[in-house]
Length: 499
Image (cartoon, rainbow, N blue to C red; front, top):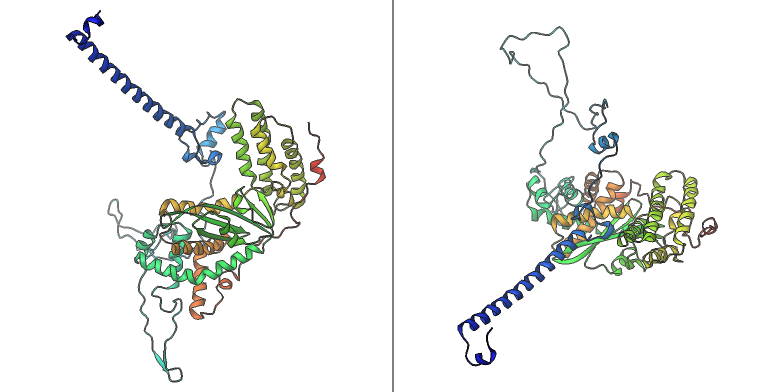
């Protein structure tokens, strides 16, 4: 051991080596501590990312990094069902007759046998056969040159040209090309570059034609907004949408077969207020506070509440009360959501089944609970505004908001493909075209053909009412409710024993 007193002011080589080694060990310990902290932080992020769900219980399977393993099939029938396809022994239905134009082609007979080269003769049976083959022509635009005679009006002192059917004044492309390209881009979700290459038309030129037609069709969407405002029932939802590099949103509003899309910079309530205004009917949506301005009755989506009930159990996996509550209320909510599809054509049977399900739901949500998560979920059903009970009116009012969520899905897919609109004008054009084309599709007609016919009418008479040209001969199926909104629960529901 080195004597401290003797080593003052004079360090021997052995003592100096010990000090140097100690300093290196301390530096190594500090480095290992920092490395350990960094690895712990990185491991924590990986664990959190693997277990977390970015959209809660609504997170699709594709967005979950850790998915539960599928249990083994319990029997042979379950195994066959998972395999898919037709059941063993199924004879099939054969080819169905296609409702498309047919073209007859005579195929020339071979001169000799392809196997041995022998001479061919007529067979003892009827040798005439037919074979239907579905073929497709390439969708390629071509130029049609019209020869016009120009006359001169002495009274107006202007040249007069004959109008060409199917083409708007000053437009180089026919209405059929514009309608088909707009349907492929805004309805079918085909990228504009693919549409441009398939038609052989420049992309910028197509977008310019869309801008002109969208300006013409903008009053049609305004008229659709007026019909939604006057409707007795409507639905709404919103999703993200980028506009010129900025975060924005796309709103969708539905009344019957009428669908309106609006692309805006924000998710503020002013956007929805400009579309539906002081709506006095029943409005179904999620619990987003941006719809609080609705003057009528709001109706909450029970599918969202069902997911929240599942979340209560997942957040408290060891709490028996939460597990029992979730296992009790989730089947009841699922049954209520399915009532509309089962009793759509029989309102009386729907009301009986709805009252029976309502009794069980009322009893579950009014039981005294100790867990705060359960109490918070129950308070939504106990709200005196009755926003979770409007489905009792009849099958005309769905208990979920699935229709608007399905209609918002195309815009979510387009967001992943095109990453949004490049300008405010492009966002407005998308809202106009999607509103018209999706409404036509919901009405069960050919959107491209109907849009082409409306543009043809406008080409012949620029005073044509475009709304009547598009929707005058089809049924928009605007909803009508048998009763007003429920302001008080029926006694058949409230008079149940709460244990």
